[in-house]
Length: 353
Image (tube, rainbow, N blue to C red):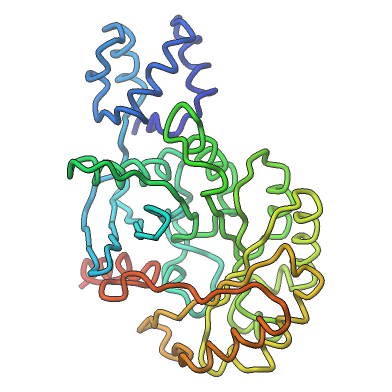
């Protein structure tokens, strides 16, 4: 299978153009056709020579994904099930926010992190996505709106879908450089957030990526006992090691870190957990932000249920009283397969049946 041309950064595309005997400016022409005019076929690139179009066709495809299912929620959330060239399935979600259209992308087929509450980890990792397959998710969502004749554009990206982004680090970084490039989609770095479950060495590496991309850490517990019971990764990178890496990141970048915290009834949502979290974060008050997330129940993880609104607000109040910036995340798509990985899991079960 030929690779997707979406997998090349502009610098890599420029190298390919020069290696194939073309002028350097041809790379920017191709780039504009891909990301500004958003063509589906190389033959539509009308200002390129026939020879160059043939070489592109010989070496690349444009779109590596097939759209299998689209679910639209009453609140405007759209969930897509895409099929990869090898027949594997991934999910992508578009969310309407007050500030624009935000897309949540997937970086792996399945996940090996093993969080016990998560639908994404129901199926073990089968492979990493290429950078082209990650970029294509953004492109297909954007084309979905282009085809409807409106001027809406994807303005924000969160790398929080199926998989652990830092376990596919190089492909994720190429994806970030591509969507941030001013000559293409030009999605601002500060409008992009990458989430990790806590791969400490990669957090340190991420501090030197050269982009002002936001970092989010899936914390979900204020101590090692609770975190290890719900997140297997805490055995390898316990809170002490994780926070050493986070401290390094903050020192190197002076950028804020968001902590994701899924509220699980009776597990991590007690007042003592809130106070413990506030103590954990107290010396970083100015550069941390806590995102309290209502839990989307997953039938395979029926040992968990969502915290009551009263418990969530009590937790929130304790953090605020301790000077910790926090918010309760707005829910999206609760009338469709809301939890990340649910739609894919359901389709695979149907196939097996």
